[in-house]
Length: 368
Image 1 (cartoon, rainbow, N blue to C red):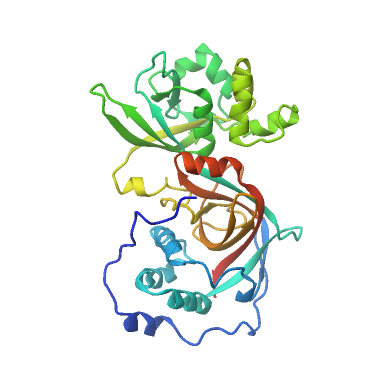
Image 2: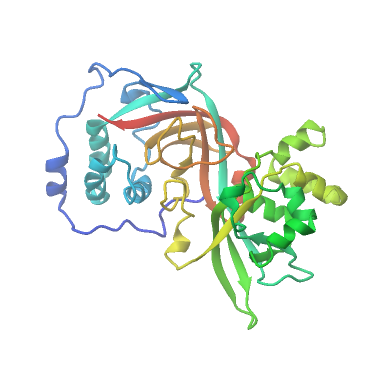
């Protein structure tokens, strides 16, 4: 699993001494025996106030790893968390006891339940693919990735994936909207499902340019899981990406059938990548760059963007008890106790994301 923030140090404007830092921020810690506030009803969930003692592993998490993600959220904070951002920035040079004491003082944990009362949900993971690409179509690179077609927003829902791939009339409307071409249509599908990716573009002089393809819209068609399609047919027992690719290797004549089972197509915009940009993930729905291992996608009807969340999940792939930030969403991320865990980019992240599917519990940390 990739470790957050090792290549992107926290930046701050005015250094403060530990004494200066601690004095205005910390008072007598809140006693967990104090009366708990009332529950909070959201559109997709119900929050029940709990003591800090309920959060598994709270005393053990290296909070400094999450602080970079929190500072990123403070670049575009909502009205509830904006008043805390000056403290969050100052605590970037604090120590772990100071951060933990401040959180206890200023925040109240709430367990997130579904509206039917379930406190356990589903954790999956996503990543940023890194793929080779070309600017022009060739025998090797023939799968286009497009900018949004002109007038897309006024014409939703637009054509399905099958119509885009097979109709000359539809392809004519996309002529000139190609950004790059990939070698493998399944890689294109994977990049569209993840919502963004990095592509290495070969230049005529043999050099390569790294750019990011960021989400710019969709055809407005419903998302259908190709893994679910295979399971429903009894073709596989394991719907992970490695299993899907293994099935395709055995059934090369059914590639289009699998691709077209998901009518949804995503369009992109190209973004230049500096060395600093490369140290962070793509921008999530909150509008800030994602931090590997510390950013999650949520259903905003359950948890607002920018909310610090305590996440606990145990399974065969990962054991997690940690502070994360709700900074993104996705078409498949629906429900009160549901999260997609951003694991970074490249092959190692792809391996984790392709297999992670395990139970989840969440606690939001809400200002008092």
